[in-house]
Image (cartoon, rainbow, N blue to C red; front, side, top):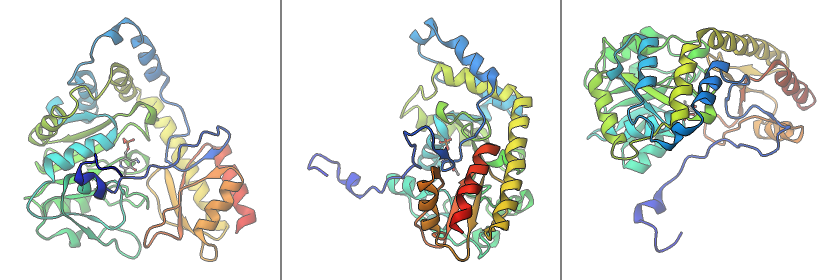
Length: 351
Ligand code: PMP
């Protein structure tokens, strides 16, 4: 801290991202990246863009990408917002939509960046407890609020809220914005984007970091009513009018166009998730049902922090959160079959 800091910075509690280790030979199952590379067509599109055009600013509206997303989901281009990772999309929507008179609501266990944005912008919030089985209790959200947000599938639990439950939540909250953060939806859920034309207060965010294997490119998006998108555009244009660079625009658009590759890689991750779940259960773990590219598991007789440490000593890194209710769980990203095998072998002597 120094006397030059703005007063509000000293009270900021920033988000702590998962570790990005420098050692390449670690089996890295801690930040839910895709173990398979991005679409070769996306890589080729970016290679084709590398050259003289980088002299010029990119399209500030990223229209090529917005159009690709609009075509993919059957919505209008004006219903699509894109940003530098969904973290940036979330940052803009918290500022543009959630600064209301009443507190916003989100689960006590969900993406830990939400309270950070509230701290950054001075937004009041209330945590709504998940049920004992970590599912979302829609009835608990049927009360006055300044907005609602949760991840679906939820993070770090992997649990999915069904689309008809989301519809019930929306019907009960016509006067506040409901944001569904679908960072992991492609690994087993049905997107709520199909509901955006029925509910003008629904905004759905997604990322290309997970199912499209482009975490290093930093591209996220939101789909909703054009009036909600307009609020995000205003915030964006007051912050950084060129959030997506030329490579990101063409690479992300090409990734949306390569449906075969997307289906193939997602299917492999889903099949591995089911195998790893079955093997963890054989080792005595309780595993939550997951619709994501990670598993949330606890061992009734072993301390989770000690397990994470024991894995690390064998070169396997998973995520352990030192937070209330979940400190006996490990969040394990699904890797390649070889990485998953390495995880299971490393666990055997620990349980
Ligand atoms: N939402 C959730 C639920 C996440 O887990 C993540 C990844 N940490 C994000 C959003 C942000 O992803 P990105 O910024 O890479 O798009």
